[in-house]
Amino acid sequence: MTKIVEKYFTQADFSKREKEVLQTVCKNTGFIPQKVIFKGVIFDKDKVGSIIYKGKYKGRSAILKLQGLKPEMDEPEILIAFKKQNKSKIVRLPGLYEYKNWNEEDGYGFLITEFINYPKIYKMPFATDKQMQLFCDFYEEYKTKCLNKPFTKQEEEDESAADFVVRRVNTWKKISDHKGLLKEIIPQNAIDDIVNTYKDFMSKNLEGNLVFCHGHLSSKDIFYNGKEFILLSNLYWTWRPEFYDLIFGLHWCLESLVDENLSFQQYLSFVKKWLSYFYKIPSVAEEKDSKKKINLMLLERTMGAILIDTLEKKDPKLATYNLLNLQFKFFDHLIKNINHI
Image 1 (cartoon, helix red, strand yellow):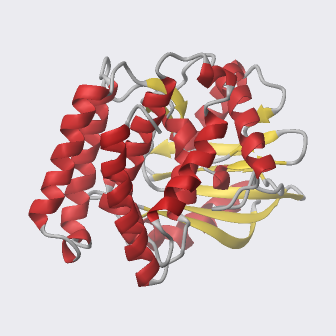
Image 2: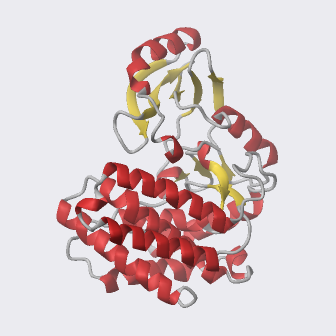
């Protein structure tokens, strides 16, 4: 697992080496770059950790990823390990063509993979009923056939789910305080109060240990061609509280809402519609206290949205402020109704 957010204060700007590294890798592999399609930053544009190109490799469309940020486990090793334990015939990762793991001397690694030219499983924020059901069908397949043997290490051995979320919110708050965007809207003591409320509530209500999962299952990371699902963002295979992976995509649908007139009732109805589908997934329905666990993960994601995600958006200011206000209300709603949403 790669600890991305935790490296906010230490990550150098890998883009300063882009020309040099790209030239070396292309010379050694024969990859022909056509365009940059993504730069992985840790919130700020001067904290580039990876650069992804579309191009040609041995006559095929392909993707080259230059990995400047040091991973805890190299992405090529993850792709290989997933394939060895995967029992699904319809969920897979991109094909791996060539790679070199990250090493201290070079200060980077790279991988060349299959170019996935399939549609995303749905377009955020508004999935249709059919697409919501498709996601749930995917989740059941992934949950029952793709998580047979963990292939990344847990950050802290025997760390409980509650300890994990408390440790992580401390990191988010440190970053939020440093950036100062939230302090421009509400006083520091109000920020401190909501974080302390969250930590106290999670410590009392979130039980159990972390589970192995894909930690980035948004619609941006799931492609579907009508027959099979292909997952991207594979550095994010990780250990999280139960049902974190189920809620992650909903979180980014909520972050994609751009409407300065959106009411709290509309926001809540949006959430409840997704939940009505989630609760019927067989592996979810058979799990004890699954509704409470899911709502606790909604609280976890809402806390992250308030501290960092929402104010990092480039949407119109009035829409962003309205969304943040709705998230404050939803935070309170979850605290009061954690078992009844």
